[in-house]
Length: 256
Image (tube, rainbow, N blue to C red; front, top):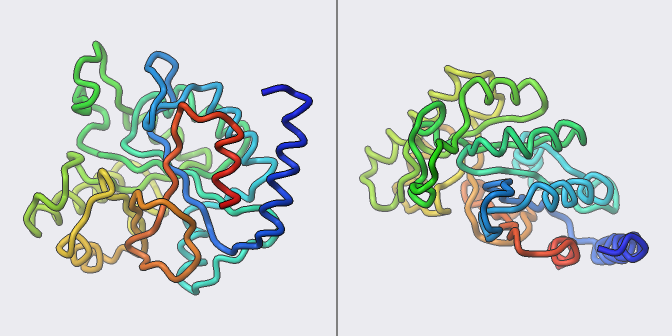
């Protein structure tokens, strides 16, 4: 983007957000931050991710997932400034999160939560969509522990990343509970007991029952929109970030 035009666009969208005065929190979904794969709804380049994170740091109020759950518990997701409130999440646990995203998040001091499909962490297993890749793509537990020391928290995303509605209630519970337990055994994560992310955004009545029985306070879908305080805490919304979109399209997400 032209360096002369960008500041004016940032100011424009900032004042648009301020005048809109919608109270709530946007939760962003990322998956892969990777320069070797074609950008799409799951993949974004490192440079574009960096550009977006710089925008969030300057023009939004980036909050932790812990703060979000506390606010929603009292149904008061009110922003303290004129800036939109945003939570950053990454799904699955790809190694490029450590190699490419983590240095940016660390430098900008942006709290972030990564939802781990724990059965893939520290193994040679690959997500089915990347089965043709020559090398393992997933994080190691050592990388998870390194990030956990720098403002990155980790939540469960099941063990094997299944389509939960296709499983029995007992099978769903095993997937969810084992994922949470694996994280707790490997790293001190303050959110592992309380937040969850549904693989593919899919869940059913059995899933919600399991979530309540296990004591989760919040769970995230892929339903788009802002969380304004009236949502069911186990069905929170998130905005999917598409790697093909430019910065202006990214800015617009917070002014709708």
